[in-house]
Image (cartoon, rainbow, N blue to C red):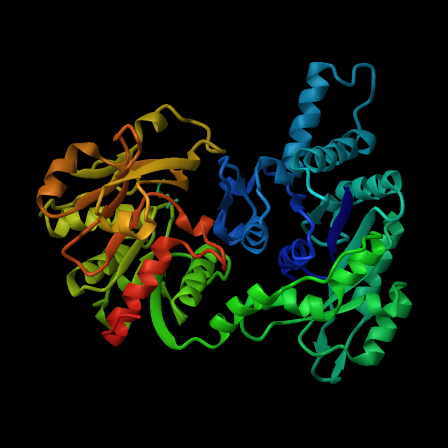
Length: 537
Ligand code: GLN
């Protein structure tokens, strides 16, 4: 087993996760099996209780783990299978250490950050390495070198590398080389200082990845090489990509990053064959057609809040030879005006997941517009609940219909708390989470799109369709096309009289990959194209 540790310097949001994932793509294409793991130094047990303003999207795994969005990159860029074991936070580490202490595991000892916390961190590396059976484990350390809370993780990987011995561990430090306009120069000092900080801890990076907006040039590379003490060819330029993040593996390959990793880890492997990956990118960069999709959400100004949704749209676009122009529409802004202005030019409307009542009425207006004007609609989780409320109010005439999440005393609770949620008091990890089976109605749109009668999709919700209203909805042409195998929970709905109106209680965006677009998204983009260009693809 070989190990790669990815750290970050200078600033956050450098795309360390993307770099780690892209390296994973290259190594897989050189014939290795790769496992990826994220360490997050914050004290929350998981990001499930954090606001998207703090954290961006919460990415859900098959086993129901609520994790960092970088795990989404890992799944989209590689074939790795992720579970709870692939995402560790300081909160989890301390929780385990404190439990051990109470259980008497350390009896007689003073429990300390070194060695008890650092040992628990190392145990999580070793455990995953063994469980995954992969050839190589890439571990990304969240945060920035110099953060107080990151120190135990850095000490743990230093100790780990010491034990593993040379040739078995590769340290990669991702940093930022800013371009100062007034001076017309790229500046290496922040990187030098951040590497110095790492070396103080006892970690000397083998590879330096310089994130930059301008090419580094020979001089800057030499300077980084000399003062960060890495070989000249181990300074990797990672410029902002021109078109799509899926170009990153190709860019890193051009910089020979995978060769360097193989050299450091003493691996002799054939070069990566990236022909298939190049094909996908070609389709993304130069599509034949274009569609405009409106995503109506409440965290629209945040790039990361609907990350997997945006990525899934792009995958589906590539599959249909369509460039997807995403219009990010703030739901609240639809509330007071006629929504026509903002929605009329769209090929399709997507309402993603969400919590809390802000923007709900705007989303209902968007769903109404889509239903009445025949605009393709895709509802995800909350987006299905919204479509249900809209139909209840405007087709069934159930005035004031709502979800009890937004109006506890509504006369028509068409969406209500799941039975199994009624006794739940704790907020963390207590929703209906992870992969769940859904059976599809034969002949329905859902069935035609998926092409099979039973599907597994990931979930993250507390509320559900209220079964007392089923008959009333169905009589009015609202089809329940997917349910749990016991028929108790509505998983998918659709309106067959509409060109494309479908919504799911699940989060299909967590299963889409560039080379395996999700069928619901692919169908949605196809329908959007037909609407915009009046012809099938
Ligand atoms: N807030 C809704 C629920 O809990 C929807 C959740 C979501 O969109 N993830 O059921």
